[in-house]
Length: 267
Image 1 (cartoon, rainbow, N blue to C red):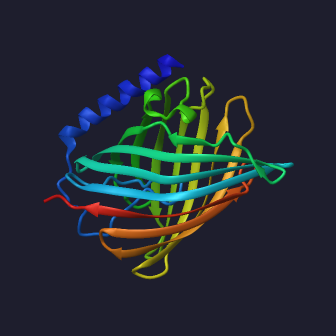
Image 2: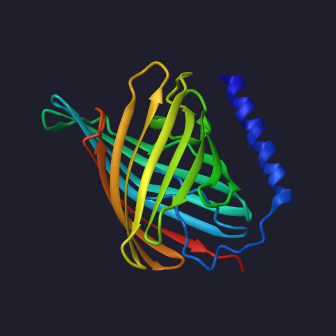
């Protein structure tokens, strides 16, 4: 477990340092911002050198087993992305979560609330789309234990990494997908992670998407989910979104959320 994390961290640092010599001078600011929300599929491109991008929102999740209902309210799903280079971005994220349990319609007093572990990571552009060759990016995150509130503090540091890939199908639609692995929830068990999202441009302003995603732990049952939503591009630097979903396997009855993303170009 520890050796795998150390190997991954060393590889990510090496690739990041190497990218300094491969800086791409093409500006990305002439096009609308590309976001990593609202879907679970991370975008296969970085924000661009000197660009600061905020992506935030709120969501509600619920799951009921027999007479016990668990509800989770996430009030701030903030992700901050900053372009260190044209092909390398720094990523910081922090959520504030509140959990409520209801038994036979009666809300229990043991409400949990606090910050989830900090997301700290990098995204690196690897390849541009070229014919059948997809656009590819590498993303890696760590989740330090000390950064979480008491109610959501794990015993071990979590880590994940993934390759993000995308294809342009035509002028109106695209396909994005992620594959990777994660170690979390105080377990040494690795879980493969996947996402597959289809996006469609209704107009220059409105877009929609649908996706399936999940994880496949080594020694536990797989978890599969789906969601779908809409985006509205108010300007090249501002986008709003709304979405809903549920699980295909047990674990989630309802997911609903909304948010916005804002890009601050370099001066």
